Image (cartoon, each protein chain N blue to C red):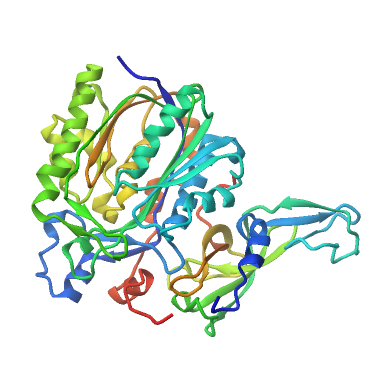
Length: 139
Length: 351
């Protein structure tokens, strides 16, 4: 591994990264993402795993020019705060062009994309990213 | 005698947002400005910098599963047909199956047969579903087609995906009532294991490969089933360019009226494993119950399948459940040759 990527960390978090798996606290009812051992709001460890909807509204975003190694082809990288109802998530945005600029309040949907690539021979890291919605359904 | 029958429960497509006008390729590489006009293609779909055959196949599959109205965990086989595998060794089928919630109780593999690997998967799933080995299977055709920069192939090599959920005939949007496959060893097009770009066997690409295999597959289907061109509302063929599917269709006795709705290559280029299958998805977006469809994908090396498919009443309720091919065709942003080069990794970069 030439980069600060961890194969095992990506594998451990694959359900959060691929399917937006979050945790709902059975004590206080709040949802957090990605799942942690204890509820960040009330400290309870009585949690259940839930899948978040893949459609939401863009709350805010930023444009990153200083991209990490392995993501130069994707520069600039847009990162957004997306409101999915039960909770908000921070995720990359994609399909952002001169004609499809992000706007606060924009409807967005999660699709699978490459997030980083480890050189010529290493692993390809996939993750859900959000793009301006065209109506791809949840399954 | 028709063979065992299977149903198509869901269909889905995906086309990336970016389009490269072919005039950009001619300008960059010093082709005559009219060089590509005979291909009947004006622009091609290009995958973005964070896309590959796996990510495109994921989206097409998500659309297909939504239209099938089943839980992803009900799928027991995932066949991924591509000739632009992101990994030489590591299946794309498992990545897509995991990301869609199909794992772990499923078969999953990547198939290779140039542009008809996914069609082979579709025919295999038909047999598996009709035999009862599985209830539902997912087949995906997806390619970020490669071409040596400056080669004529670059004009048409495009990106896109199509996917179908195959299962029992009951409740299906369309029934695969019969099918045949016709293959030979033909040196029309290949890519060696470590090579980034394919080569084509010049004189072999047209008559001895594309036309010979498709015509024999379709004629065998006609002989076997007793069907004739007039029995079909639509006919869809593999589309390496805008001209070949019209010529092979007309040679087989089909009219322009039967051929036009299944064409996608004139708008976005050749999406290889998704080429004929995306045409099929586009036809299902508008087909009516009772319509009979001829589908004949082709792959170099070489071989063709011919399917006779009949649309059922269930098609109408499924149409609005996912974006149509026309919606993806309309969603486009034009890019220049430099953006295309970066997106497709043509620029040599030390990583």
